[in-house]
Image 1 (cartoon, protein in one colour):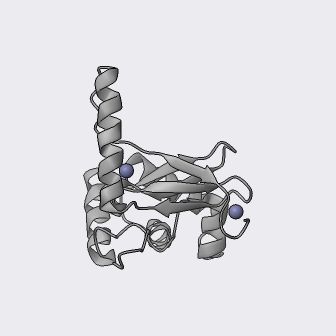
Image 2 (cartoon, rainbow, N blue to C red):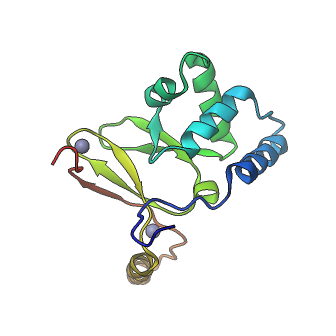
Image 3 (tube, protein in one colour):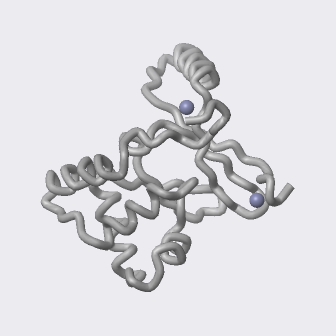
Length: 157
Ligand SMILES: [Zn+2]
Ligand SMILES: [Zn+2]
């Protein structure tokens, strides 16, 4: 990955991603159906969380909307997909961090676009230090953190 590339690095290749997800689904007596594979492949190729409508636009009519929602529900239940909410209340979906890697989000207050943001390691270490410092002041043991940076994207600026 290029040094100034702020996109999250895929922690696994698509093949091993599919294998991991297949195993997880099997543990829950669920199959890795065509619809679920389409949703996963689309999310894996996205630069940020996608709403059901955005997924539908990407995947096309080969997956009916009802099947898309059902796939999202099952993938959510087994912990493969997690929702991300902005203040506008739209649910967008992404692969969970154990599949996608740790990252944050850039939220445009104008157009509503949500993009993934993987911090350079030096920044991530500063964030962890800050979070642990805050935790110690309130007798709370942080194990993870998540945040959105709200602002105006380059297309809206
Ligand atoms: Zn924007
Ligand atoms: Zn972080």
